[in-house]
Length: 211
Image (cartoon, rainbow, N blue to C red; front, side):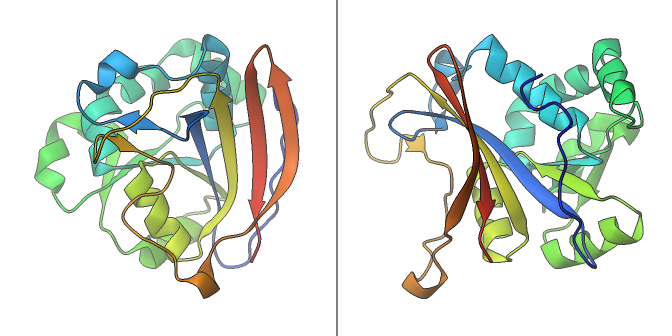
C-alpha cells in the first residue's frame, strides 16, 4: 500500500473530509468531449491508490456529473469481494456507503439502495453524517463539487496524483481541479505539503488545507 496505517485528524462536530484526484502535468483532470478517449489519466498504480483511499473512508461522495459518467463503474468497484477484503483488513465495514449530491434525484433512481441521494446543503449534510457516526468522508468530485466543499470550508486534505502526461487545452474543453468558483484574494486556499511519494514517473502528493 502507498499509504499504510493512514491516520486522519479528528474534527469536532463534523467528519474529516478529504479528496483524491489525478491530474496531468498541465493541470487537467478531465476532457469534456470524448472524455473516455482521455481516460484513465493515471496508471494502474494510481487506480490502486484510489481504491486504497476509498478503503480508509467511512463514506464516499460523488457529484451528479461524476456519478452520471462513472457511477455504475464505481458501484461495481465497491461491490467487489477484493475491495470488501481490503476494508476488513483495515478494520472497516465491508460496505462503503455511496452518496450522490444532486438536485435531480430521479435521475439516479435506478442505482438502488446502495446509493443515497442527498441535497446540495453541504453543512446540513455534514451534520447528518456526523450524527450518523461517519468520521472520515472521501469526496471524489467532480471539480464543481470540490469547489463547493472548499467554499464551505469543509475540505481538510487533498491527495493528488500528478500523471506524466500533457493534454493541452482549447476554450471550455477541459476541466482543472476546481471549477465554477474563483476565490476572492482574501479567501484563496493555501496548502501545506504533508507527504510526497514517487512511483516510476508519477508523483503522489498529500496536502493539508490550512484554515
